[in-house]
Length: 291
Image (tube, rainbow, N blue to C red; front, top):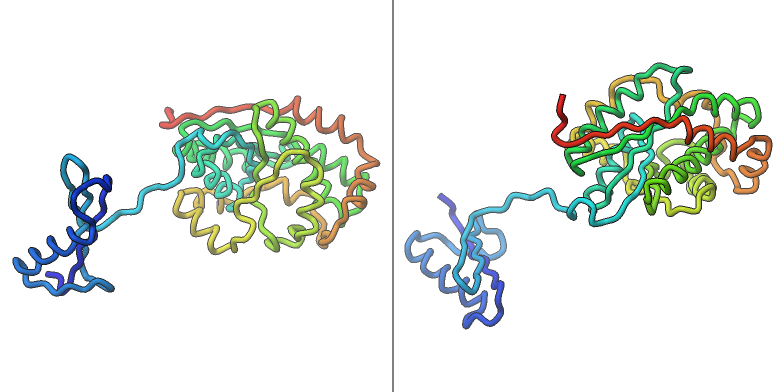
């Protein structure tokens, strides 16, 4: 039995002939008289909630947190760059929670690397379909483009050039789906290349809004959220990610826009983007997933 309690009342209609504090005092007095419990308004062991409506009232004990967020599709369309790692699935889920329909765009290096990353994102896409009811996954071959970058760009600039290429390709795909923004799982300081200067230079490759829902979080916070939504066990499965292919040991941490533009001048950027878009494959997932 609780040693203390309080009553918390709310009115849905302010025209009712009594106030919430009045109801709390009246009901609280009756409970104290019947049970002998002590009233504690600051730290009660037990709270009786009362919701008053014009036609009647409801009472309940305790609250369970719901999913929160907004209804699916009410926030518009966005496209999320989805790797097989921990961060980007959480970024996608956070946008879904705000009512956005999220197009999932995965860059892979097959056949240079194995299909492992593709299998992982298929599992993630199927799981995320439980939050937005249906998911579209675009698989973009990126290994050949990376090899061309290796031949033309200095090692320390390659990561920024890779990311700028990804944003250009994702923008083309997003506009074809009528999306209004791009989403990434980038976090300031998460890795050497994700400095504020580099993120700004990378975002300069696209004219679309770039949203980074995780930008101020740390790895423990992101991992905890990934575990809560169910993507963490998938994300930690070992794979061969294109993000680690041809990555230099010491990437530049403060690449200026003019440096990136100069490095890209040796590449047929428009041709590379068009080729990647044309080679992209599409997969659709619905909830519940049917085998």
